[in-house]
Length: 490
Ligand SMILES: Cc1cc2nc3c(=O)[nH]c(=O)nc-3n(C[C@H](O)[C@H](O)[C@H](O)COP(=O)(O)OP(=O)(O)OC[C@H]3O[C@@H](n4cnc5c(N)ncnc54)[C@H](O)[C@@H]3O)c2cc1C
Image 1 (cartoon, rainbow, N blue to C red):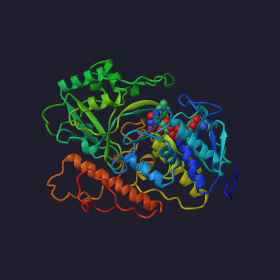
Image 2 (image 1 turned 45 degrees about the vertical axis):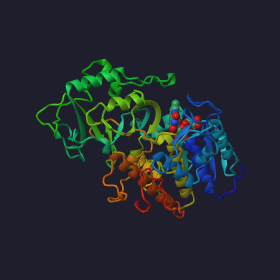
Image 3 (image 1 turned 135 degrees about the horizontal axis):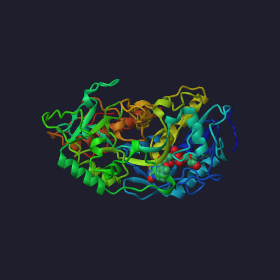
Image 4 (image 1 turned 180 degrees about the vertical axis):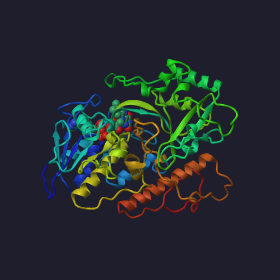
């Protein structure tokens, strides 16, 4: 490395998807970087190589459709922002239909080479054994879901025991507009008005005895994923997968997360439900609801099928399905400010999966933002946050504040890792969806497609404006048979 800059370096811990992207963004802004990566000296349980940005499992970056898919939009926004991860992925793409899949070795080699050849980046192969020394005045921790134990302990000491999780126990999250409110109703148990509540804070799905028994049978028969040997078995009684609860006794769920007490069916007040599934608002926008107490190890296909047996969820669209995995991540909504800096220690940022995003692309995108914010701070420039209408802004908002912290389950953390999805975007302005000429009535699905297309177009336009790029000609790859001119310009 030839260091040719008047700025002192920014340190990054972890050369995975997030750390590599952050290093690139900082160096491209003219600020030197020292990237500390432990592989080469110490491995993790999942990585196989010493390459930077190694993909530990699938080789897919998921959908590349920027016209109607939230992941495709984040790809496009990252490309606009000069992402190294996206440039290397594009260069090493392999055929995968509408998805962006990569040759994993070619991809990782390309990232490693670009980082090593950048004149402002120095790579040091070492494990950072605790919180960085205070004379490193600007640091980004991007050590990922498999952060080494010594560093994790340092983070835990700084943030508090409850603020660092080593497993995620994820309950499925449902798009609010896919829940059938002709069957479900809003009510808090015993109409309790908690802090900030109204007494109608939950969406309730009623089951009669036959429906409950059929549901329990399906749960017990459902195909579950086992834990990998190195993950251990992290069950503790406050957080059992629902299928394990069902196996412990047919009535267990009816006395646990599916208890019907204190709830009266607004559509049928005289008939007491045998069991009730409750969903709680998950984001400040009110577009996503999580299934309370429904963490599960069931396979994704089985989950969608079984959960759609619940009355009111027959057409449920899942923003994410449940899971239980080894994962190290912090309680970002309470610990980080909007620029991903730890509130308790100026100059210390977090990026990647450790912030509570999920997935290769999302992790890299938060690395991209952390890198840009850190470089701006070093150069004495104002930090410019991406608008909430962009995919980058929507994910950042979820991590740093959009998630609702549950206060009716004291001691429980409700923040769980999340992929980018349309539920994180603010809704469109009323009247944005215009029916094409000759169309009398939208079918529900068509309206959803149009809504997504408009959200994508808005995101890309706002991202261009955030980055100071000239507006692009409006391009909507309409799945709906639209006439030109019926789509509001964005
Ligand atoms: C088993 C497993 C399978 C997964 N499968 C998928 C999948 O199929 N698709 C998907 O999209 N996502 C998947 N993920 C999630 C994926 O790992 C992350 O989304 C992504 O890699 C996270 O990027 P990151 O940069 O935050 O962390 P990583 O890419 O893990 O990078 C973190 C880096 O920090 C280094 N490091 C850790 N501690 C220290 C330390 N103390 N000092 C120095 N360096 C350190 C590590 O060696 C690593 O290189 C999987 C995760 C796991 C654990």
